[in-house]
Amino acid sequence: MDINDLRGLSTALLLVAFVGLCIWAYSHKRKAAFDEAANLPFADEEPAAARDDKENNRHG
View 1: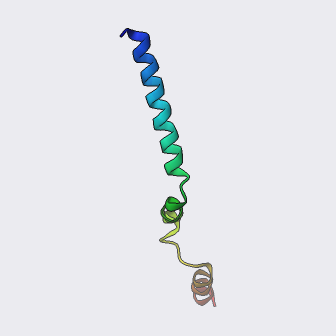
View 2: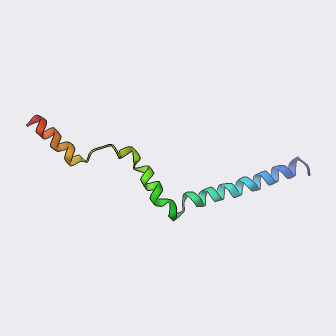
């Protein structure tokens, strides 16, 4: 086994890993978890209606 065989095997292994990662990332089973994670930056914000009520009470 020479260096070219190792390069070919590593390329094939990385291709399999990449395809597996793509299948995992776009799996329908993971959609709910990814949607929840995507909304985490907005978790601390208050709804617009509550924010408007606070501003109206402060200025009114």
